[in-house]
Amino acid sequence: LGGPFFQFHRVGDGLGDYGMIRMSAWLHPFLAALEQKMKQLKVNLEELNTAVEECLILAKARGIAIEKPVPSPQMCSRAHEAIDRAVMGKDSHTTVLLHIFENLRAKSAPERLPTVMDSLNDACSSLQSALASAEFRECIGDAAMAEFPQQVATNSAAISYYPASEKE
Image 1 (cartoon, rainbow, N blue to C red):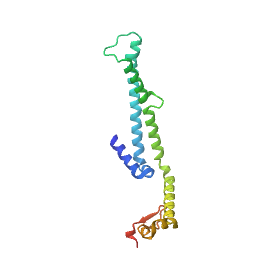
Image 2: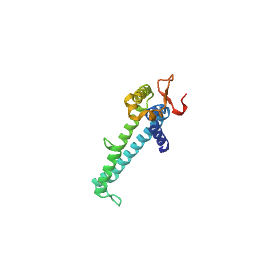
Image 3: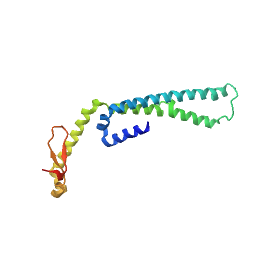
Image 4: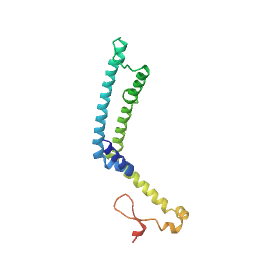
């Protein structure tokens, strides 16, 4: 499971929300499978904790002989802290991870694509305005300005540019 997760992470790093929204058809079933595995792991660890409690802690409290070696009180304390952190506690690792899966699913929902595209278009328009401003031209000079690509009109809402070497 680590391999695909790493590849989704690479797409997210490279393409951000837009990339993850475009990958949602693959990401959402993957997250559902991870969520199912995490829930099963949580159930298994809770059952293991119950068995350990029954065989060691409660047996000792009832005066039943326990096979040696018996964990020390400090070992028992650390084990309780670890299982609480990992599984049983309110803010356990499993709870946090399941919450992260849900957030990933929500942030990569295809319904968000129009909002993300509007935001990208706004950023491109703002950048275009800033680069075309007299203040910016004054700061960098005409020679540096010639190195910037020229805007090309497109049918899409997003702004496209060609490198300066491909100007007509």
